[in-house]
Image (tube, rainbow, N blue to C red):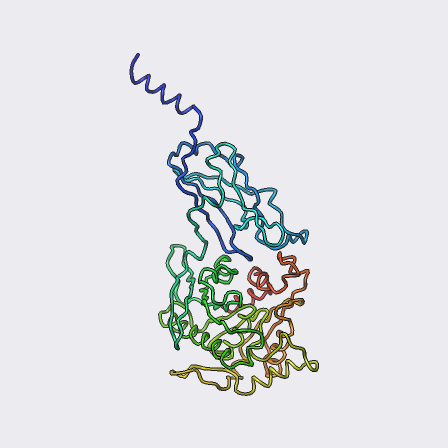
Length: 424
């Protein structure tokens, strides 16, 4: 019998035979920043033998302990359970198997207050393609992987930053775009840059929505920032010095043509909400709008103290703003002096808070917004979330301080983010 015929038969039998077991070379995650941590969007498995991937479908795989990235299920108000439908989509390119899924919490399923049960990917067709987190060798983070990570020095300080610059459909960086500067919360102070960048969706929110806007976050070190920081000159001097550093860096971006100096916006939450207020006290004439969220009290003591009479906090804030109240860089040092009240009240602000916030009580938002109104502010807006509002965004009432979650997730008409974008 002819040798070529025998070879053809052998190849045919091999092709029709059982699929060989996969020889896995590496496992990689495709993730994104969620409201409360990282989300897994896809798992990519690279094998040395492509034939082992042939014929695999979503039906061959199952995810376990894959829960939504929220504190509570908006439908039940209870801790989220694993998805009934994993939303799996399987595709293959040469020797790489890609398994897309409904985004799930990278940390796994919560059990009690402190324990997490890791997620797992099971493959019924080939156990070699079953995956646990311990096998992951690399992670690709949407948006953050495209950010510029660097350091900047000014006024005796050096701080790390991450900067996102939007690109066109050809991957070319857009020029002279709007810029949103995010002021980090106290929970991110003195932390590494990636912890800051993944703490919430501040860097990725606009990019995920496809909005062509730059986003900037600095890793700040304010070890002495606390409630009633305004009572301590060295504390507010450091806050203002950090802001001066950020403004100096923004000026370099403007000079390079990266961002449009007439379209600068600032937002921040918690301690960052307080820093947003102080940033605008320093540079109100440079910004187009600001969103202070669940703001702290680096202007007058508001938290951990009681009003002596109704309206005292507003009176105190108004009095401070009428006098010397802010440090500014004079080219050599930070100098104490008055702010530009006219520019400050002309700058529109959208105040955001939760009614039952127990970390930074809503009294700060009422005091700041009312004091600005007394000074002549006419364009401000205020949004106070109820517990029901928070639950609809996956925030448990006991976590009411997390009002930055609906802030950064909501782009519906009239929302604070929609309000900001309308001014681009």
